Length: 246
Image (cartoon, rainbow, N blue to C red; front, side, top):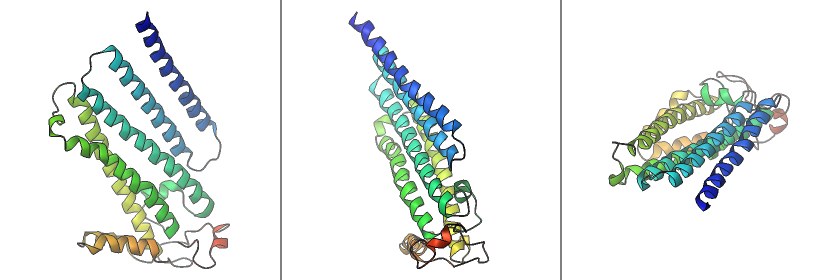
């Protein structure tokens, strides 16, 4: 009887996690003109998948004889999914700032190599992307450094493959976004986006990239790479000095 009650409690917990996630998806989809709405919906969907995944693993853990390796590997996959949800939410917050102050939207900022962005947008991107990148790499590093758990055969190998595929996709996507952000920051300083290649200079390349893009003020007004990145209606009020032309 106690086992039946425990199973019912697990399924009830599973349902209680799904219902709020579904309601959040519906509410996010019904919101009208909201900057970064797609990223908000992506955040909710990813969290929804993550909750289902954790609930399913817990149910299987209590109802099937799963080995520790299998469970720990699936938890590693789900932790990466959670970090992706954090990243999408960070981009959503980023998009609200962009909509209020800059002339381009967040999708253009992250995926297009044309246009310009100020220092403030660059630093917000760094604060969102760099911590998430380090957190995403942690479960993969932990797995690959444990040689006894890298076997890919059998049931225990499938979550490892899923984890590595997710990590590869994250690396490709984050590299593209970083190059796009760097290019537009170089453009704001009236320099070619190819200047990003300076990062390959040993020792000082990365420091020069962060130092120049993060602290050198961009051109006031239009330059050969595009118009002033600040919103013409509100951003001009931020132009005095260098406080917001960052």
